[in-house]
Length: 259
Length: 259
Image 1 (tube, each protein chain N blue to C red):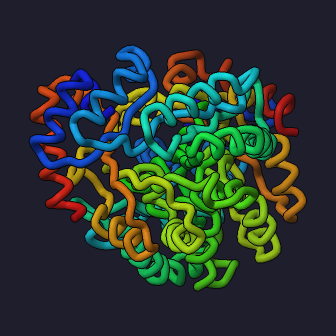
Image 2: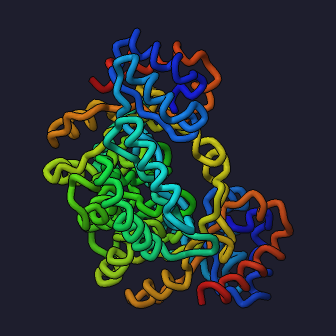
Image 3: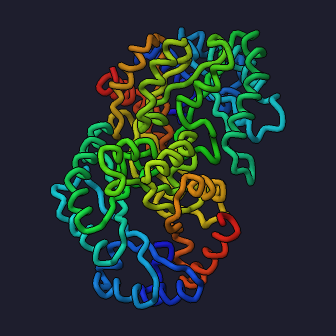
């Protein structure tokens, strides 16, 4: 999504050239390209699909068919991790605990289906500014509390610096998540202000913002995480630029600010 | 600030007519009007000044003179409470714990000065979306941890629904703050989306958003708070309308959604 201006072949070619060993994919472009075809492009390039984004939106979904389809797509792509953006409040709703209970119930239905297909569900806590309309799970503690109902091999969490950097309890939660084997994905983005209208597409390029990315990478390392590290930037300015150049810049920024 | 389009005499006259017994004031309009003159207008109308907003911005302040001036102004206005918006990260900064330590240090310098003038300092946790640029104190728990260094008669917290509604730990923190006598101000605003650019002026009119305002009012009541309840809306749409009409609407919304 960081370089959504690139086609899948352009992306994989640039990754190979830059020595980036895997890519996190989003459902929409994958489905447009064809799930099987996308799997083949990535595989033929010698890359892995790190995660598929996203299932979820449980609080407004009338059924879980679309989430089962997302799990199937993850399996086809050969990734072991489906990221869940769990959903906010239903229309007119004001009850966050009820929304979180509904999220837990939906995951209970999906987890065995996913496990049968070799796919783990990774609950991503989103920044509290999204609590109403995108994700009632706002902290790593809340995500871990939901995950605790399930085996770590089935349900874990996403650690994304953009969403948790402000939280003084998050470092301890990262350590706990690591002990439990529940860090299923680690994502980097920087925090830049002012936020744009709608607050969706203002994630900062690594190093441009206020997050001590290296400190978070070291925390996640110390928690025993050895999986892929994704950089997920929703940023209108980056999307307006040449995608290969952005990818190259991002790789350099990663080395400079997080490695 | 909810009806900043009104002059101070227009505001006090409308409050008297609507049976609103007190007003929270902001420093800029008070200083433009003259602090002594503002105090007299409110007093002559038979109203109280509930709080003065705001001191703070400790993390970028070179000295505390402006905060001492704010304390003096609060004393002149006859309010016992100065609200603190503590400040975010200094330019180029990435260290939130250090910013919070600096905030604690500044409050330690100011609290005795304020106490001598009969003014309490009320730390307002701001929503985590302001952590970088406005306030490194993002939760009621953090505000209480800072306040714990001082007597409750000198330093307390502001409970503002807009900033804490998403936080599953906030209800327990409200109860604890009440037990400690540290709820120095209670403010209402609703959460509406999408957020505007800059995320400053999108606070929702009561009832327009996702916050169960009555539940929070009841929690604060149950915590033993008997002080004034303020409605603080930063909202471009409300500011563009007739101020007296907005004040009347706000009073009705309060009765309907929070009383």
